[in-house]
Amino acid sequence: MKKTILWIIALAVGALLGVLGLAWLNSLMDFIAMVYTRLFQLLAVPTIVLAVITTFAAFGSKGAGRIFGHTLLYTLLTTFAAAIVGAVLYVLIAPGNLPAEALAGNAEANSSLSASLTYYDHILSIVPNNIVKPFLEGNVLSLLLLAFAIGIGLSKLPESENKAVVVKGLLGLQELLFLLIRGLIWTLPLGIVAFSAQLSAQVSAGVVADSIGKYVLVVLGGNVIQFFVVLPLFLLSRGLNPIHVLGRMMPAVLMALFTKSSAATLPVTMDTAENRLGVRSQVARFVLPICTTINMNGCAAFILVTSLFVMQNGGTSLTLTTILLWILISVVSAVGNAGVPMGCYFLTLSLMSGIGAPVAILGVILPIYTIIDMVETAENVWSDSCVSALVDHDL
Image (tube, rainbow, N blue to C red):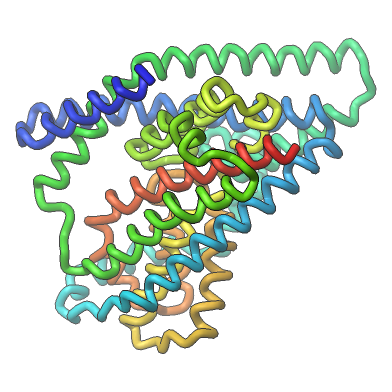
C-alpha cells in the first residue's frame, strides 16, 4: 500500500513539473524516462528467456503444455472479447470520415514508412537464422522459439550431473536478475515522476487533438470497458475478486501506463504477481512471458477500430461480414505482435498498406497515439495479470 501511495504522489509531482513548460526541465525528464525505459528493456529480454527455459526444464513439455493450454484459452477469449467490444462501439458511435485536406500533409511521410513494412516480413522475422541476432534485436517471438527449444531439450535430457549444473546455473542467473529488478523497482518513483512529466508536457503542448474525437472515443471507450467490465467478469466467473487482484497488481499496471511497453514492464509484472498477488512462481514465470507476447487485448481493439476507420475513409463499405473478418484478422495480428512501444501502430500500418487503404490517415492518428498506447499497454498488462491469476486458480 505504501508503495502504491508513493507512486501516486510521484505521478502527481511529475504532472505538475510537466505543466510548468520549462524546456530544460522537460529535457531532463525525457532523459530520465529514457534511462528507465532502456534499463527495463535490458532486463526484459533475459527475463523472458530464463523464465521460459527454466519452466520447461523443471516441468517438461507435458506439464508446461497444460499450463500453456490454459494460458492460450484465456488469451484468445479475452482478446476476442476486446475486439468484439471495439466493433460494437464502432458501430454504435459511428465515427465520420476525415476531411481530405487533413490527409494531404501526411501521405508522403506514411508512404515512405509503409514501403519498408510488410506483414510477410513481420512473420518471417520470427524465425531466427542465428542464435545471437534475436538477443541483439530484442525479438521476443524469436527468443521464445529458442527458449522453448532449449527448455524442452533440457527436460528431455536424462538426469545427470551435467544437466543439474546447467539448470542450477540458469536458476542462479534468474535469482540474480530478480535481485536487479527489485533494486530498479526501489528507485522507480523517480522514473514515474519523469514519465508523468513527459506526458503532461505533451498534453499541455497541444499534442492531443480533437479532430477525430469519435474515433478516439471508440478506442479508449473499448479499452475502459475491457479493463473495468470484461476482464473483471472473467475473474468473477472463477470466484476471484477483481478489486483484490487489481489492487495487488497496480504497480505493474501503473508501470505499463508510463513505459508503453508490456515487454519492458514484464520484470515488474512478474515480481508483483509472485510477491503481491501470490501467484505460484512456476505459473507466473511461465504464463506472464507468454502473455507479454501473445495476450494483446488493447492491440486487438486498436487494430480493429483503426483498420475499420481507415478503410471507411478509403471508401470501403463496412458490412457485417467485413467487420467479422477484421475481428479475426485483428486478433491473429495482435497475438503475433511484440509487446513494444508503437508495435500496434506499425503493424496496423503494415496491414493497411497491404490492402491499399489510405495509410495517410495513420499520420493524423499519430500525434494522439501516445495516449492510446499508454492506455492499451496498461490494459494489456492488466489482462496478463488476470490470465495468470485465472491459470493459477485453475491449476
